Image (cartoon, rainbow, N blue to C red; front, side):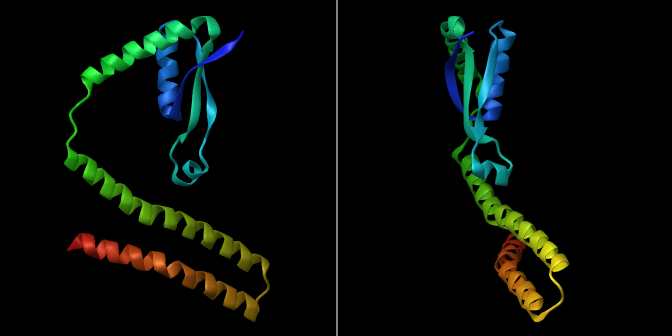
Length: 151
């Protein structure tokens, strides 16, 4: 069985939906690919995913997907520029808060493990305070954002 690439997708979800669409129409399809490193940190599924079918089904698969896309374009709901702006602002705030928080949590977990392994000493105390102080900018930023949003 020789596989051929029908299309490439930026998210696993889009690739899997296309695969299921083709499978539902009698065209066996599978998805292969990997997520980007950053998607592991943010929980997204961005990456590079290829939709593959048997070579003999390639043209039919492309045709079915094109028909599906044309039908989807007719069904799209209108989205205003204001909606996109709200989304952009929301994601910008999330990027400032969530990613630093994830790294802060990972940092504190590592610090906890360090403190378990390291015997009590001046080095352990100084190291602990250094890591804790490095967390402050994120907490200050979160406080300022919360204060700004509540006024």
